[in-house]
Length: 495
Image 1 (cartoon, rainbow, N blue to C red):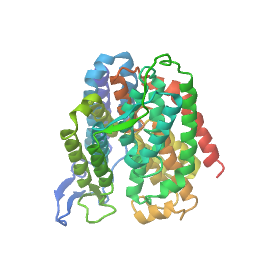
Image 2 (tube, rainbow, N blue to C red):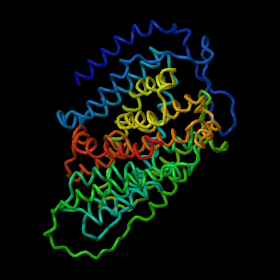
Image 3 (cartoon, helix red, strand yellow):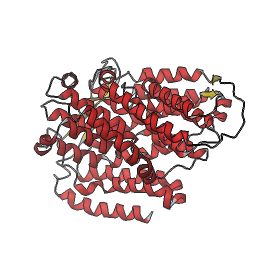
C-alpha cells in the first residue's frame, strides 16, 4: 500500500505544473446540461467557451505510470503479497483509476476521455456479467472419460460456439464441464489451452464472438465481414492449438489406472438459462448507431446505448433469481470471478487512457502514418492487445489505419468503404487489426475479459494456475508467439 500512496503523491506533484501549461480553469470550464431531444434520447451538451472544438492537451508520457503500476501489481500480487492483494485489489484498482480520471479532468481539462471510458466499461461489464450469470445456471454433464481425443473435440466445439454466444458465454458454459471431465488428471495446461482456444482465438468469426469485433460492427463493419475474411486464419490457428494441446494431453497419464464406468451420455440441466443467453445475444444488436429508434445517450456527437445494458443486467438478475439452485450448487457458482474482473477492469479502463491516447496520437501523426501498413497494424494491434484491453486497442488502430487513408472512423460510410477495400489495401488492414486483436488477447490474463474469469474458476476448484509472468513465459512465448509469427507469414507478410 505504501507503494500505491507514493505513486499517488508522485503523480499529484507532476499534475500541478502540468496544469499551468493548459488554459486557465475559467477558459476550460465545461458545462453539462440536458437539452431538448426526441423522447427516445438523452442528450448531453458540452459547452467550451474559449474552445469551440473542445480541444484538450494530450497526456505526458509519464501519465502511463499508474497503468504500468497496476499491471505490475496484477502480475506480482498473487505471487509475492497474496494476502494483501486478495483483500485489497479492488481498492488499488479503483484508486489508480480515480487518480488518472482526476488528472484528466482537472489537470488536462479533458472530460471526453473519462466519459467515453465509462461508457465503454459499462458496455463491457454488462455483457460479461449477463453471460457469466446466465451460463452459471446451466450444467452440462458429459459422462465420458477425459482423454486427449475427447478434450480436443470439446475445444473444437467451444471454438465454434464462441462465435454464437461470445467467448465469455462459451467459456462460462464449458469451463466447468471441461474441469469435471478431467477429474483426477486436470493440469494447468488444460486451462491455459482452454483460454487460448475458447476464450480468445475461437471467437474470430462474428461480431458476437469477441468485444473488438463487436465494436467494429457498431462502427459500420458488416456483420458477416469477419466470417469471410478471418475464416482461414481462424481454422489454421484453432487446428494448430488443438494439435499442440493433443500432444501435451497425450503425455498426461494421470488417472489412467482408475477404473470407472461411463455411459458416454451428455445431459444438460437448467435449459431455461439458454433462453436468458439468447436474450443477451439478441440484445447485442440493439445499437442506436444502427437503429435510430433505439434510445440512446447523446454526448459529443456520439450515441451511447443504455437500453442494451439495462436488458443485459436485468437478465443477469432474473437468470440468477430463477435459476435451478441445485445446478448453481453443483457448479459451485459464486460471484467472485465476475467481481474480480469488474474491479480489475475498472483499473484497466481508467488507467489505460493515457497509453491508448499516446499510441493513437502517434499512429495518426505524419510520422506514424508513414509507418502504417497491414504488417505494422498486425503487430501493433497484437502487441498492445495482449496487455491493454483488446477492444479499445482495436478501435485505436482502426482509427489510425483509416486516418492513413484519409478516412474517418466516426463515419459509418467510411468504415464500410474501408471494409470493402475502397482504399488502398484497406480490407487487408482491417483483417490484420481484427485477427491480431482477437488472437493476441490470449497472450496474458488481462488481454481479454474471459481469461481472468476462467483462471478464477479454475483456482476456486484447487487448480494451481501459473502467475501472470509464468503464463507468459511458460505458455505464451513458446506457443502463441511462434503461432502468431506463422499466421503473419502465411496471411499477411507477403500479401
